[in-house]
Image (tube, helix red, strand yellow):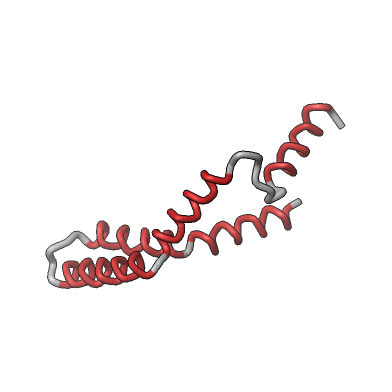
Length: 96
């Protein structure tokens, strides 16, 4: 095994270890706050209202169907992000 290949394996193992690096406490706290804000009750309520308004505008012919579908797909990606990432991680671990 070459040295470069071995270094690639060790760096990917360190990146996936799950331990936070020293001094990252404020950054992790800020990202946790952002995640809570994006996935909390207020965001869910706003997304439901947005999807309802987009759906109504699409049904009445005031909005292009393609643009409306991208808004609705964006909401699915936003709220399903954790499931999407865990699926990708599981697939990557199985592929090893």
